[in-house]
Amino acid sequence: MPADPTASQRLLLIDDDRKLCRLIADYLGPLGYEVVSVHHGVEGAERAVSEPWHAVILDFMLPGLDGIEVLKRIRAAAPRLPVLMFTGRGDESDRIVGLEIGADDYIPKTFSTRELLARLRAITRRAGRAADADPDASEPECVAGALRINPNTRTAALGDEPLSLTPVEFDILHTLAKAKGRVKTRDRLLEDIRDRKWEVFDRSVDVHIAALRRKLGDDVKNPRFIRTLRGAGYMLVDPKEY
Image (cartoon, rainbow, N blue to C red; front, side, top):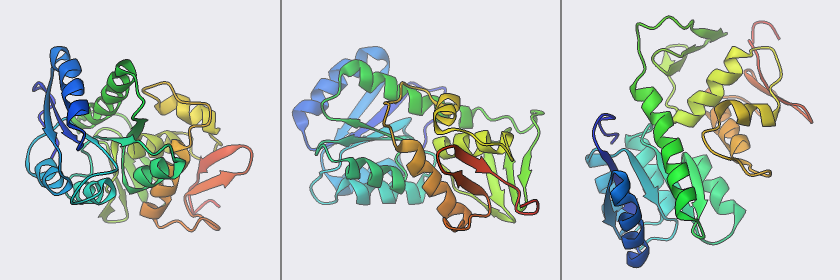
């Protein structure tokens, strides 16, 4: 579960590489992080959803329960808890699957400590914006047909049904909604939502768009809300107007 944003940064590290866990704890500890390491998938999933955390770092390969199943359990109980996934196989499919299930970001196990810190800070900043949401703020709600996006509470609903969005999914949807009817290039969308340096061939935004479409019930071939303009980018539309 998400932790109190005003408390010290409490981090759950789920990885069976004990040496790596010690190295990460030794690096992040002096920077204000309380790192708790768990080396088994089942225990990691249970602790992730039953205790307060600012973020989770999760490995793909775990004994007892693999990282994807752990992530599914986390997302079922705590959709807004920031999750950073390790990818150690060097396979792009690992990254895509993790993002599809709901990871906020990924990092290869060949990471530098500075890169780990940057990505960790990025996903916790997004979650912090959600925690600091002010329902009495005055930024206007974005509306597209039955879709309503409230930037003040950082919530979205489709009709009477609230949408369960990760922080990065909300940022993408809100950015598209503010530009409703106008094309957002992929690079521009990345610029608008980025909290870290994106790789040139980073596909994470495409995966997050696909996840948003599923949650909106959009048909990829005939979407109601998020359209792809081949070679140009993405555009959110009002179904009543198109």
